[in-house]
Image (cartoon, rainbow, N blue to C red; front, side, top):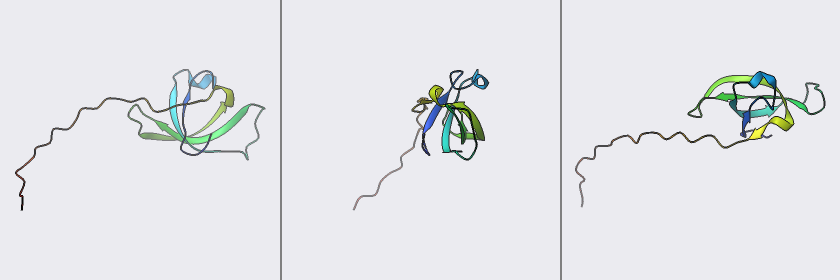
Length: 88
């Protein structure tokens, strides 16, 4: 995992994620000692629109972390009014 990666965390990453979340990784925290196969990461929890809603430090099983593209949520196009255009 590198800075900027979006990861999907579910129960496979840790039992704390029974409700899965998306996280944009800031960095791994290698100075914290962990069990083999586990890692501390720092990142922003993302909402459905992909906006950061909370800064989190998370302890996860590396094998359960899935790199993920953000889910695409269709948004309504804003109606734009165009006025007259001057030419020349």
